[in-house]
Length: 363
Ligand SMILES: [Zn+2]
Image (cartoon, rainbow, N blue to C red):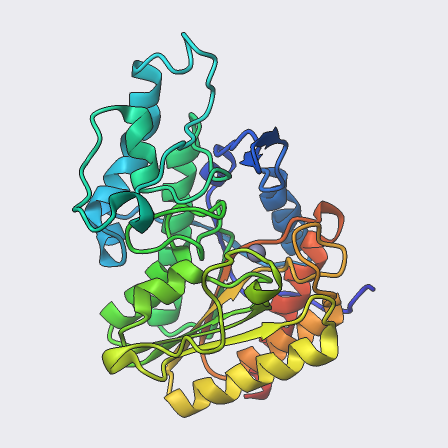
């Protein structure tokens, strides 16, 4: 379904370095498959937004220490250096292993209560940070990971400076990346970095609304114990067999001082606009109650009916309605998460941002 949008005035923050990450597929249930998190995702979104008249601003570079605001420095150092170590270790030249992929994971079951250690072998160390086999690192990955983080931070700065809406075209996405681990095609948590940047700029209370089809377990983990950054997500029910499997259930409500500031609204596979928008409205009410002064929208459009990565059935009109609801809550930084159906991806992102623009105007 095509949605009328008019001219888009929301600034799009972008860095061409986001195209340098070529994961080269994923290892999915033991087989190397082509994967769907491809550079073309970003180019089709950029084209759709530019065609609608959106101004495009370059992502500003940030000091690496900015990334430590939500991530352990060891994770950041791992991501920054692992490809060079992998190459130097001969994995590519001697064994044809052209991407970094873990094979052993220090799970609680393996450690049996003993403290973890840092393995001497490069291939042993990857599982210390990467929690699945589908999030591969290649030659340009770090440059893109860094650029996506820069885009999110720059978009947050536009809001901190008084802007009403901004959009960061982040690739790779980020909401599955936690304080000290990565997975789910995500490496650093762009939305969490944006939220923390807003807090640092003096915004008292921030809310993250996550409308990606999957639960943002990384974002939840980062803010789970904090009352100042609310996290709310609508997603396909992990209890019905969907990634991230172990997190995203309704009874996860935050801990300690963060109790009540985390909300998961899982949906049954097959849910479409009506049920999905009901949950988005519920999250919006929650955000109002929380008293958020600025919103970070984890904008995944993989709940789209044609998306290969989820069983939800949301239309572009549904996404526009969600954008309108969220745009009416206050200033919004939208951060690109998932969305994998190349023919409709641009239309869905555009519809959401057009809705945000409409919602902000009506506010
Ligand atoms: Zn997703």
